[in-house]
Amino acid sequence: QLLTEGARPKVFCLEYNPKFRTPTNLKIEYNSAHQWENNDDYYGCSLQAYVELLKDFDYTLVVCNVTGSNCIFIKNEYVSHFKIYSDAELYQPGRDFLSPMFKGKPASMKYLLNLVSSTSK
Image 1 (cartoon, rainbow, N blue to C red):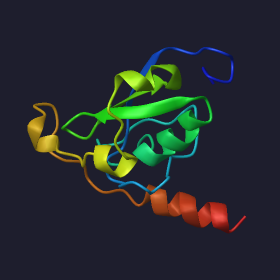
Image 2: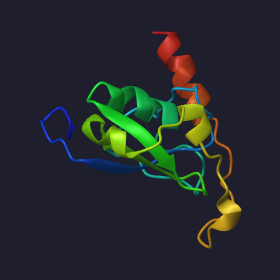
Image 3: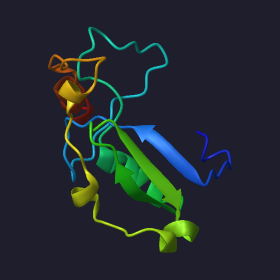
Image 4: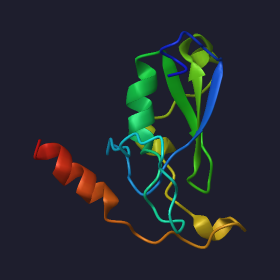
């Protein structure tokens, strides 16, 4: 919504769901009442979903952190200041063991349920 309303920050730092490797383009369905349950893996979107969304607004992925949780995009006008790698090269898998906060996320079948319900409509 931020982008569709015209905001254009120079940099985006976003949390992605590292469970889904590039080129998987997947996100949870929007639900204003959604709450993260039991620290499971049903949250956010894949790195590729951000790449696809932000390229339409002239942003390029420049880095992902080593724990596989955050990614940084810059406006295309600043791309010349960076060495640009492919999305697949930048993707980092989840490494919860490097974070003092979490020790892994239980698997959830909610992604599959979303996919099945959206294809049956």
